[in-house]
Amino acid sequence: MLTSNGTAAPSWESAAFNNNVRFEADFTGSSTIDITPTPNYTTAYNLNPSAVFISGSGISISRSGLYHIEGYIEIRNDLTALPTALIQGLELLVDGRVYVQSQLESLIRDPSGPNSYLKYIRFVNEVYISAPGTVKVSVSKSFNLGPASFLYRYNYGKISGYLISD
Image 1 (cartoon, rainbow, N blue to C red):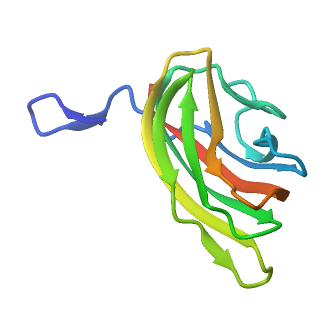
Image 2: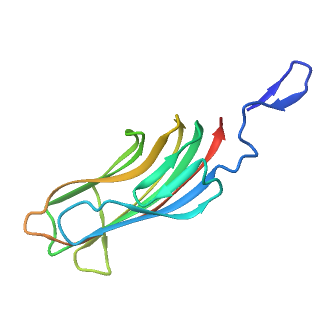
Image 3: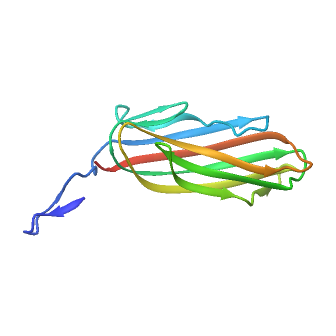
């Protein structure tokens, strides 16, 4: 943060303004059965692998500090018929704590398929992470399919972040 010593001489203190702790990952998951797919993470970029480690199961943070985390997810469900109710949720999890929670009660019908439903959500958060920490995206579900059954479920998204302050 920008501070002053009282003589109008500003200086940066405990700031991460010139750090290289910046990352981005893609995550996908798909299923042909009635389960929520576990996201698999792949690295888009990672400027400091000693502070951030991106693996298939999530993002590990080994440098404590305040982080800016943002991203989006697209959720698609292909069904055999029109469902009675279909509710899905998105959570941004940092060390098991939920920071973003969004219920997706109104899925948009995709005109490319007779019973395809899409939802797009963007999330932005600033989170203090005490190392070692983990960052994950989770998709939940609650539904009454009625006469419908699942044909295919697909989740795709991106998550990025950077250290704001140590």
